[in-house]
Length: 148
Length: 90
Image (cartoon, rainbow over all chains, first blue to last red; front, side, top):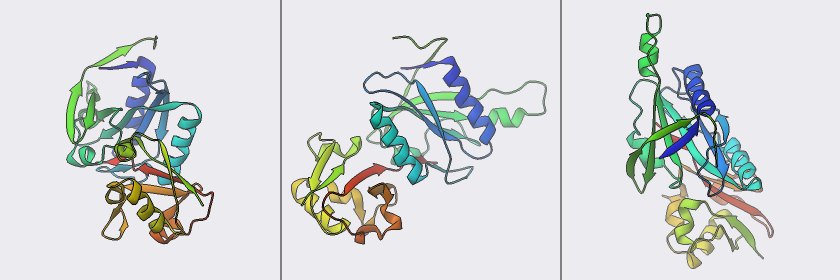
């Protein structure tokens, strides 16, 4: 199960909306071994694409070095799908390389299609474990305050 | 002569769980061959068809090796090498 603070959840959704129709991506770091996503880091999608995302390699190194210095790890790795559901694509599964992370997928498809209408569609927000090519969806619990 | 190589979580199955290992070599490809001798299987996860794998990043002293010669990048004693898988998808 992924437990995530409301403010972090909202920030991920806002990031996905802002970058639509391109995919948005980032991580939420937390203390090593804690499984607590505490520090949101929005990343630039170096691919700048509606169908692909990739962290810039130089920014990736800077991000990891910062986490190592702070004894953190990537608790959540998130990205958006802008025309399909919030489920890992074959590429997502093939490239997933953090077996300990929660892979969060958000989809801006329904939200984008509803723009200009009377009822704003919601942004789908789902979380998965991706280990050795195997995808397991997990429950997402949104809490007002992250607690120990 | 020793070069420290930081190993990402996903590849630590090849290093007995070690976060960092040491090896030697005057170039990145020589270093990878040296590491392969003590950590069999590692090379195949880094190199494909004579080139670095597209979604593996290797840095020498904080510089992406793609900008300094790729597998031919020169190394010296005391260099810090970091391996990080790309964070990417579709």
